Image 1 (cartoon, rainbow, N blue to C red):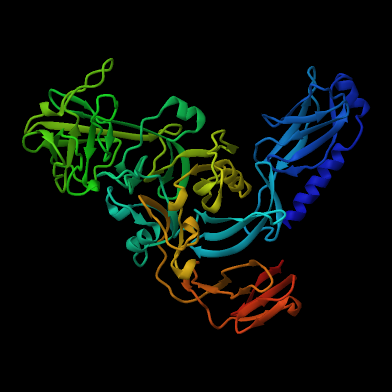
Image 2: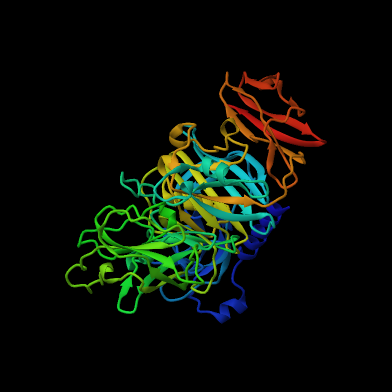
Length: 607
């Protein structure tokens, strides 16, 4: 019904436009004003070629789709051919001939509904055309569906690109989102699969997620440290880096994904500020739980506040000055942020300390003992703090564009790849495995996406996500660490949905981000679905269908339903016996499966 209504709307729009100007219209505008009589398509995507037909156009014609200008490919007095610019939703097309503006004609940017199309739908991604298959589509948890998409070269001459996507409906009462720090400790790494298993418990199941931010990969004490900020359950695990104007302007490395009440996702820049004040000293805290740099040329990372997230000690190894802090009466760990916490210096300050022990309920101020680089304000030495001093620590963290908006969870990322419906100009020009997280315009849906080898550019990932309704998106960790997890699904039911570095073993990460189910424990099968809904095979290939059983909350509780009846409708393409299909000839067919009175189908294409 939705497809039909869109087609009817487009036909009606085109019909309304395909006419000559009336006398009234001619009387209300200049006879030299351009006039659109028709457009070649009322529905499309960024990169499509569109022909606008009309009159009083000119060689120097400009075309607007809403507020966005289109690249003119060719133009004459009665036509103009353009490339559709970026945009979302429905907009009006107008033509400008240098003196006058035309009438308005509606154009709608296409989005793809979950599960729509399925087979060989042609899509334009950054000027290249692909056949898009939806090869898997099933529930994996409360309000959550998993899709596997495959971008096929239109001539099948190049390797396909597999994309895994999770779509979460945040209105589900049993769904929240939580980050996980590897082993709950900064200087370590852990696979996403292990994180989910370790953190899950009945009524608190980490059922689907991906890797999070990039992490420090150097072989030092801080290997595994998230590069940007991390907030878990309202506590600051690591601070974000300071914002740089060029990054803000280009959608650079500082953007973060914030979760309001652990539910609604929004993407913004993170603004951090920290200070420590005693009766005689003011110290700027340059970060929380990050490596403290010791060279004078490395500004703004001289003093760090270290808490139990780094383990038993600060791990700092460049002979800085460190002061042990115990919380004053009325304060306790976790210390949170956007408030002032009072501490008392516990013992004498060590002037040249390597890795001071962190009190179980306290913190350590770790600072470079010298002064800042020439031309900047000298920093006050941590060594001037004394045993028994009261130190008031103030940590402030808020979203740049929505400073009053509350959040309980936050992860960092590398680039804000879709910003308010527009693809960011910053493009990571390498075909790599990718991870991204996104949100719809109304914030009702959260998307997590991974891309397998041979990989995609960040703009290609962004445009693909945009086709499914993503309005803001953040690029997360990529390369071999790219991981998507779905409990009880994937390779050997381990949860691994993608193929890191073309293999079946996940790589370790510094953090992950997960959908978490609070639904009651329930192992009864209430629904079923095939693990694949579309399979492309060559002659001689075999395929054995797998069927998942889901409980009433959508969680997979049976990884291999055995009481499913299945049959093939076209024996000309091969045989289906003992639960296995063997491809014998080119053609198409359908395996129809039934369980509990419900029927599902798997499309088979032998090519």
